[in-house]
Amino acid sequence: MDKRPRRLRYNPLVRELVKETVLELSDLIYPLFIIEGNHIKKEISSLKGVYHFSIDCLEEEIREIVALGIKYVILFGVPEHKDNKGSEAYNDEGIIQRAIRTIKSITQELYVITDVCMCEYTSHGHCGILDQKGYVDNEKSLYYLGQVAVSHAKAGADMIAPSDMMDGRVGYMRKELDEWGYTHVPIMSYSAKYASSFYGPFREAAGSTPAFGDRKTYQMDYANSDEALREVSLDIEEGADIVIVKPALAYLDIIRRVKDHFNIPIAAYNVSGEYAMLKLAVENNLLDEQAIMETILSIKRAGADIIITYFAKDIAKKLKGLS
Image (tube, rainbow, N blue to C red):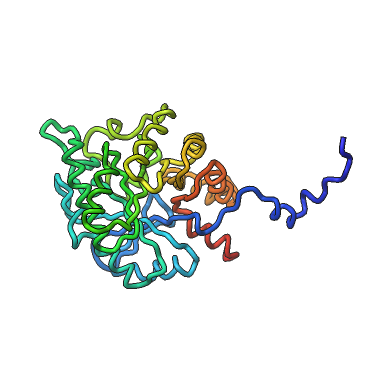
């Protein structure tokens, strides 16, 4: 047996030299919630440290994000008006469309991704258009989702991220974007999106809780793993450039399986419930703040190339030695 001393292993410089997984700012996407109104910067009660912003209050936040070195944001809109077709979602003067233009007027340094779904915009809170019996009409939903994608691209979105989970939506949006001349706009698809209990705080933040029923008919059963591979494979075939696994922490095994099976960039969404429970644990001194870094690093170690997380600003400050 080799009897050489192992002390060098514990030297901090050596640890950095041989570290297998490194978390970088370029790995992170920061979610922003944009709300109608004026002079609004209001903390979301279930997501401490995360805010609703009206468009006129975005500039300070955007400049802070850029100064911290965060390069990517994903936008979620909270409209004032909702109807059964989610018409504000594809309105060229809608909340997200105006927010994109505002951000681009403030800086060209930020890459703007937009969530494409109907749930925030429909009066019933479901992710697609309902038929007369109250079921989601997949084909009709594709038409409207295509309009949303094009309207976001027209406003200047750098990437779209469909989160609706309708069958065939990636291929439909790719076709629509290409026909309108937006061949350069990539699609980051929520491919393995589970019907999870960890979305609660987000639904409060986005005002997207279903008025009735649930989303289990079009989101995935959390008991299933092979199904995730089938869903990812279908989205890749339809033209997805990046695939998302959502949530992240309870689905690290899914991230790993997708990584092992497909040669495509993988994003993981560290969702609102995951954020809230860890934030509360740290603030109540049940866990050390280092638990945040440990947790987010575990998502990358599992195989995620990209992490969508409300912790992005906290991590940026940590990496820059500001906290």
